[in-house]
Length: 38
Length: 207
Image (cartoon, rainbow over all chains, first blue to last red; front, side, top):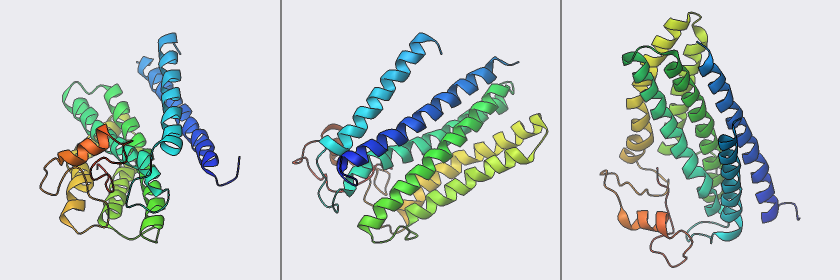
């Protein structure tokens, strides 16, 4: 894969968006835990 | 995480990956954009929309908190919505700046769109500052809910009205300055993004 090529951009985007996705999943589960508290 | 939720999370991740790959490897370049810059619209426009919807959701949760029993979960939902709105608002600003560097020659031009989103981010940043400055839980929930309800007026003004009453370099929108829906562009964006011959595909964001 050539650095700066379109494949590189796709790979970087996938990593960034997967990170954001995991963060949002964690946020969701944290919120559900808070919901359980009185 | 329960199985159904886990399955949906995986499906969502697969969808997300497919959209990223499609945006870079499949979608044709739009006319009127320099180089590959049109590809950023697949990310920038949805980010701006998510940001706006999250800010509105925060206002709605806050209204529910104030008028339907002062339930703490409504307050928490509003706070999380503002956090998400800020996150996606920052991402929309950054991607917009990258696009502006390619198309307009500078990352920042004080275009009405850029200015209005910065003001929106400052407004909701102040919401988080307000929350963190109050120690009493009930007072924090009450005051921040009132502030977020104010956002129901501020956010639509900053996202939709302000950029339309001033001259802007930003690509034209599906919603016109008179508040009318431009069907030809809407059709172009929603139904035929992959057709190079589709009418008037050369410009535009949908916010």
